[in-house]
Image (cartoon, rainbow, N blue to C red; front, side):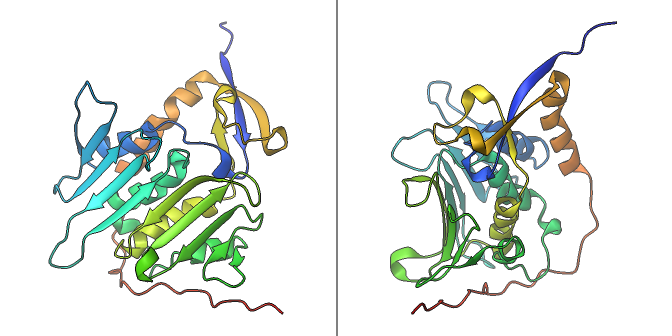
Length: 253
């Protein structure tokens, strides 16, 4: 009888602090479950993926001064062009909430409200400004249609009043069901598993727990994810797009 091989994992909570993780969690399902084609230059450290209709492109490019992830969708007769960006330390599991909604539009709820998943998890309106803050105060989301900051901005901090750990931005014309896919993954209270040797410096011991898991279970996780995304689902009633509900400003004395 052979001894089972295990590996150590760190479970990070809140999940916003887990760090980027394996980019394949996003790119492999887009390619294998969504039919996105890839092109790359072996001399350039970047990944380019295009949707089957060639209207949406994902670019993953390490740049210390710019977001690492960029998604761009060209204008159509039915919808304006839009763009979304994610910083290097945005957990791939949260980005996947957005990209999964791209390849599974039938999974979008009717009348999507990006704030709804957050409100259900106890996020509250921010004082003096629009938007919501997480219960621990480390993550905020705001919808600001002003010209100086159009669209949605999500900011995650390592500690209160600290330097932002990562930011995600969605242009004003980003379909609400895609933003809602991101906020559902953002609101999920489940911790994220990481290699203990690859944790961001901002993660403290109190924010992690350790566990031993079978090595083959870790190796199969991505394959299982791809299989789940390729299972056909019944189509729901047509999604009706509407402007998101913005929490009112809270006044303090």
